[in-house]
Image (cartoon, rainbow, N blue to C red):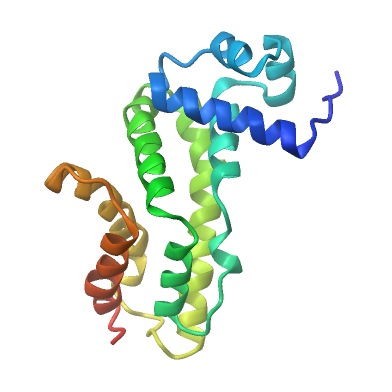
Amino acid sequence: MARTRLTPEREGELYAAVLDLLREVGYDALTMDAIAARTRSSKATLYRQWGSKPELVVKALRNNKPVSLAEIDTGSLRGDFHAALSRTNDCQMEKNSALMRALSHAVHENPDLLQALRELLIEPEMTGLNTLLRRAVDRGELRPDHPALKYVSHMLIGAFTARQLVEDRPVDQEFLTDYVDSVILPALGVG
């Protein structure tokens, strides 16, 4: 059966509703029935359009991402990181952190969700991050054999998760900018 084309506006409304529900109830309690009710859609339409709950959730997360990291090129690695951080305000960062907390437990119980997250969100983000880092190597800012290069994604993810655990505070631009300048760039030997 062919998919019905949704307007970008309607698709955006659906994705926003999915993310709102996800924040409210968590992944396990999120149902296609609740999404259908919230979005005034039929469950059949949702399944026809997205196939499964994991795919719908991950595509909603992907749609929520303002820009691909690979599109950012300021001419310096520090500038690229700062530009990436400036694209999201503190309120959105807090919402995104809440979404990640809602999903962090669910991925262990739902292999389909983990696979969808990897394919649709994590791998494209890692590709974008690798593009930023490769450009920095090409410009001579980073050594291509620097041992910390393979840990940049781990450091970034660590910043998001550790702030809430250690300080019981959400991540914000000020924290992440300081983290990039104080931890990631020095670890890479960028002054």
